Image 1 (tube, rainbow, N blue to C red):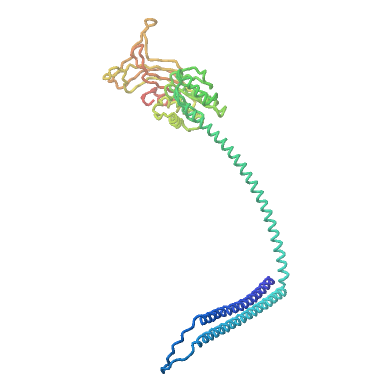
Image 2 (cartoon, rainbow, N blue to C red):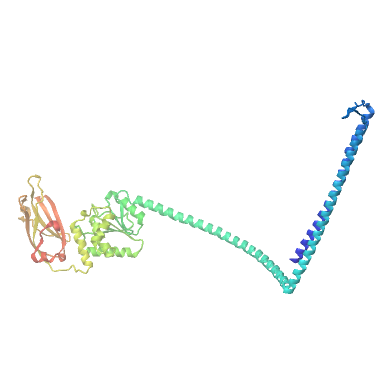
Length: 495
């Protein structure tokens, strides 16, 4: 650092001296050029005057008058002499000024040279003092050591920079290759996912088309439980094709309609369930159906259950409400029933008959531990409040009722009486009730037990018998007050 400062001071002094010498030379050249120009201007003037004098004689000048009236007798030849003297004087003055300027510039150059020398001397002295102080303080060796370490650090940094640059290039190349590879794999995965989604969308579209068509649609109660309309003979092939395409062989059909049909086209199993004339399956049959459905669905996670009845969905809704309670999907069957009806798009819960709701409650009691086995009970009488009109004359309603009691598809008792045997057998017409009668009371006096169907019918003649109402119940679940008093059906509207 000190040597650099000394070199800079020396260079500044030399530059100042060189500048001063150049200024002296320029001043001398300017002075010489000025003298030559002055002489050149003076020479043409004299030559011109001499030529004029030789070519044209000058007229004699008129005598000038003086202040006293005397003529001025000065010769014309004296004027050029005066002009020449003035030019010479001007030239001498300019030479003198030029010499003075050259002397001034010379002095300035000498002063600049002296200043440069003085600056160089002071720089040398300062450098020596600084070097002396550095040596005294021991900074010199430290400075050299610092320079050495600095140089080594610079070389190390340079090597590490080169190494880092190479590693960075390698890393960038690897990352680029990895990104390209990942992009290709991601693209393949996207194509695969898109293919799967397209397949699922296509399948969903096909299924949505399959869920509607000839023979009615397929309603999803849950993911694995479906309800269909009763397949009429002309619609059986379409329904079978629809179920086969949806579920293959992995479906079980519960036919609750008590009507059979050709099931050869169905790849799944079709189970015909018989409980003649009952709006709901008996309690023991309900338990068996729930166990069968549970076993089927537990065999394979892809197995599905398909249920249908006839002319509506009330039997199907009753069974499924019991089954969903069996699986603990709902705490009570009365909660499951609205859910099932909503899935079947049957908003009118009133379409579910009171007897069907009664058997849902029976099933709930069985799940709670109720034993349906009981001792026989006696049905004493049936009382109906209000007279239904079966007469063709609306102004004069009439009703000719008789009672039937059914169990397991057989009529075990009837109030309709007959007289005679064989060809002489005749049916006795029941009592006719009119609008004037406030109620109807019919004696039964019959001992029975288990699941029963009580049916009231209107008698017009032996060939025309019409059902007025049906009531299904189980003797084990009858309220105690009705059993004690033997009055089972005081108000039919509440049954």
